[in-house]
Length: 124
Image 1 (tube, rainbow, N blue to C red):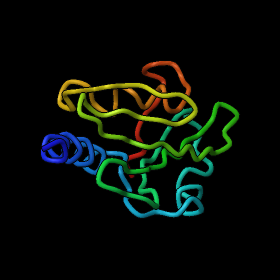
Image 2 (image 1 turned 60 degrees about the vertical axis):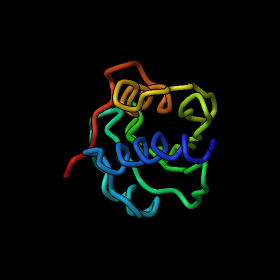
Image 3 (image 1 turned 120 degrees about the horizontal axis):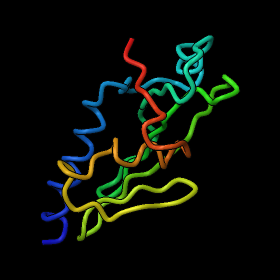
Image 4 (image 1 turned 180 degrees about the vertical axis):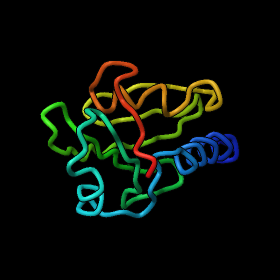
């Protein structure tokens, strides 16, 4: 029963991430680095696929431009629990029970450790 309840939440947050305007799919760190190199907008970011997915967890990367214009590749994990989804990197947050209200955009600035609204998706 628990797996049945988790699946819609997990599918919803995965779908939201994979349909995000910054999503680039299976992209290596080197490829992401090349795309962001020479960009001068701090916290310009790409979302990309990680290496692991289980029934309740999926990992991703957000690659982004730091204020000194270097590139950072921050891994994060989305975990599904009965009460909603969580994210983890060097901190954590959740549960977010309703992916339509509590979206990945609501936590990306926390994952990137930047001020709310400072980040912007790379859409080229």
